[in-house]
Amino acid sequence: MADYFKNVLLIGATGDLGQHILTALLQTTTTHPSQPLIISLLTRSNSTAKFPTHPSIAHIHKGDIKDATFLATAFKNQDIIISAISPYALLDQKLMLTVAAEAGVKRFIVGEFGMDTRDEQLTDSIRVFQQNREVLNHAVEVCNSSSMEYSGVICGAFLEMTLLDAEMGFDFSSRTAQIYDSGEKKIEVSKMEDVAKTTVEICFEKAKWAGELVYVSSFTVSQRDMLAALDKVGENGPWKVVERTTEWLQERGNKRIEKGDMMGLVDEIWAVAFRDGVGEAFSKKRKLVNEELGIPRGGNEAFVDAIRGIVGEWEAGRRK
Image 1: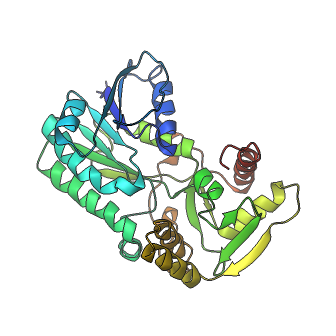
Image 2: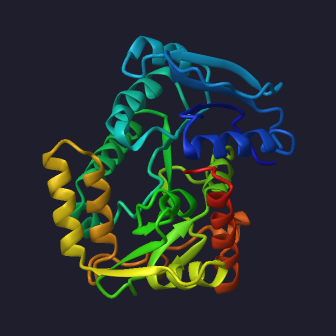
C-alpha cells in the first residue's frame, strides 16, 4: 500500500497560478487516498485576499516571507510546501528552502513553472532564469544535507495569461500580432489548470518525484499557429500582423530595463524563446508526464478550442 503525505502549505494562493493550485487541492482533498488533506495557506501580512471556506483549509498564515521566524512557525508540522511565488520574488525561496529543511518539511515544490531551466543555453541567455537556476541549485544543496526532498514543474508558458497580457506579441485590444523572426519556432504552452493538476499530482506520494523536475505541456505551437487559431475563432476578420525581429524585441527589453521597467525582462524571455536556433521545445528531448498523470496533450483542434475559450475570456472583460 502506498504511503502518502497529507499536510500541505501553499505559498502564493492569490496569484494567477496559485488560485488554480488551490482549486486543484480542494478538489483533490475529497478523492485522494490520504484524505482528508490538511491545507494551510501563506500570504503577505498586508494581503486583503478572501479565501474559500472549506473544511480542509486549516490555517491561513499572514506575515513577512523574508522573516525566518515567521516562516518557521508556518512550516511547522508541514509535509509539503508548494511555492507558487511571484516571479519577481524567486530568490526569496532560498530562505524558504533553508527554513523548511530545518522545520522538518518532507518535500518542497520549487516555483519553477516556466521554460526548461535545465537547458543551460536557455538559462544563460535570460537573466531571470539565472535566478531560477540559483534557487534550484540551492534546493539541491539543502536537500542533499537534510531529509527534505524537492520537486518542480516545467510547463513552458502559461497559455491564457501570456496571451491575454500580450506577452507573446498578441495585443487583443488592437487585434495586432507582432510576429518575431520566422514565427515558426515551436514552444511549449500549458493551460494553467493542467499545470495546477500536475503540481498537485506530484505532491503526495512519498516514493515518487523526489529530486525531480517533471515536464508537462498542453500544446507545442508556434506564433504562426497561435495567429491561425485566433483568425479562425474570431468574428472580426483576420488580425493585423507586424513583422519584427527578436533582436528588435531584445533591444526594447534592454531599454525598458535601463529605465527601471521590469517588463523588459519579459521582452528578454520572449526574444530568446522565439529566436530560431536557441533552445527548443522541451517535448523533443524530455519525457513528459502528461500520459502518466492524465493531463491532456492536445493537437490542433484542441488548441483552437483553447484559443476560443481565451477569446471568450477577453470578450467577457476578465483580463482587460
